[in-house]
Length: 469
Ligand SMILES: Cc1cc2nc3c(=O)[nH]c(=O)nc-3n(C[C@H](O)[C@H](O)[C@H](O)COP(=O)(O)OP(=O)(O)OC[C@H]3O[C@@H](n4cnc5c(N)ncnc54)[C@H](O)[C@@H]3O)c2cc1C
Image (tube, rainbow, N blue to C red; front, top):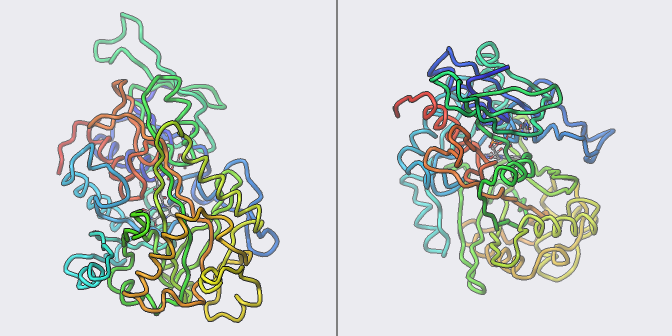
């Protein structure tokens, strides 16, 4: 088949590219190749009863399929340039925000109406943070929640399925650039992109790669084969904190998710809060067989818990000659899996007293863990510099949210945020090959739902020549 445009990956980046392409020009022949399943067939075998831990499916249903890594996420769409990626460096700050707002409107039109938008604008909490050496980053956040996020995806798929050729369970194995013959039609660019998959191959005039984190290795191979320059060297490491929701309620009621940065006194490292889930649950995350920790929360009050959880992460940048920052993060996560058989949980009081937590101490504590993890000692896992930074930040947070540093506060480890290598793309998000675009988390430029989605819309408008709104 020859398509006008092939999109590789049906995560938020790919979905919003497809959405905008056919919105701007319904005559375009667009295909989306997705390694995973359609939304309704995405099922993780972990049911908490018969299957309690990851069984290592060949293709992870949580990370792959229509909706991408975001499908079962908390659906927090942060509208900001302060975090979530550096899209603004390519397309400008105003345009980046405009596109994130546009994505928000689409989400609202497809089932997200009635969900709440939180904002740091005009909040007094910013001053309180500053007075305690903490920086509250500016953002607006639409919280769809895991349940509504799913409904929005269902509705967008229903609208697109007759206009776009979706090929599920169809992993693109290789991408080839084919130069056309000299007698090709005048309108042709002279270059065709050919994607190879288990059922053969298909061609297109323009190709949008949006393979996310799960496609990072594939992306690396493609860049290697096509000599597209890349760079990388960052990994974020830390723990997930779980405490009674009341302790953070003045922040979460007003802001939902507060992104707070603390600069440590000892090493002058930045520690930040990440992925805050009021009344949420702590969950396992499996990346290539390595079990780390993450969090969710639901809009539905029936699914909510008494606890709030959030990550405290320290960004680790490496300099020459070390290049494998993700490998470093993986090794630390493996160490925690080796000691705990999975994720380790420790009371803050035990960590400070230099002793491991055990079942009895966790049981007697006032915070009921929402994830079944192995009681242990995080100081045997996390490098001292990172752990010292986290402890300093917990005491700093205790000043704006007294109770954060209580003995019974639970710390789960490790939480790792892996970063894709950054692919060299220009202001059109286009590689050195005209018509070959790399967007979303797979580009290394975005790390969030809103930035990945916005990058999809941006490229679709560039291709169709649509003007900015
Ligand atoms: C548990 C969890 C919770 C999260 N919560 C939030 C949140 O609340 N807010 C937020 O902003 N971000 C959140 N994130 C991050 C967010 O999901 C990602 O930033 C976002 O999904 C990136 O979108 P993407 O389209 O770039 O990539 P992805 O969503 O990763 O999608 C890429 C798709 O490409 C497919 N693919 C990969 N390789 C190939 C190939 N060779 N051929 C065909 N298909 C391929 C994959 O199967 C996948 O479906 C969360 C992530 C996780 C894992």
